[in-house]
Image (cartoon, rainbow, N blue to C red):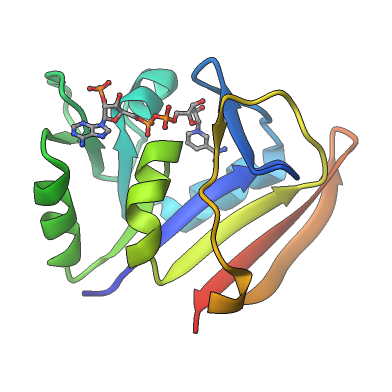
Length: 159
Ligand SMILES: NC(=O)c1ccc[n+]([C@@H]2O[C@H](COP(=O)([O-])OP(=O)(O)OC[C@H]3O[C@@H](n4cnc5c(N)ncnc54)[C@H](OP(=O)(O)O)[C@@H]3O)[C@@H](O)[C@H]2O)c1
């Protein structure tokens, strides 16, 4: 197994989204996401897939859903255990791209977290799961400001 990586943008209170939409669309964060995940498997829940509206390009998309999705570039899983077994058996990096329910399920299996920590809050209805920062080494990859909002892109590597 190569590694399971979670990638998310989180507000100061851990907020991830509201009304099935992202809270922020900061260009440097979207570019970081594109660079890191392009060419790699991405795994998401059905709600995140619907909020994207189409598969992400140039990456195999694995979607956990109870519905039927017939779309080129998308492989669906209807069973969480099956998805976990499939992901764990891969010899490739796998990026878990949300939403909250998928992050919660895969956090215990994750070797790395890529968190864009946004120095702001907005009303949210889904949150990144709690984790113990002492379980990880934290490294800041990029800090900046976009649209007046400060952010830091961090890599957490499990100790
Ligand atoms: N800030 C970020 O980086 C980031 C990233 C991604 C998403 N988000 C946000 O997160 C929110 C969505 O997160 P969410 O937790 O509500 O939804 P989600 O994790 O994206 O998807 C939940 C869906 O996954 C499927 N699912 C979950 N467990 C399942 C199981 N055991 N068996 C079969 N299917 C299962 C179901 O899909 P079906 O309904 O299709 O059956 C369920 O409705 C949105 O607001 C989105 O914008 C934020």
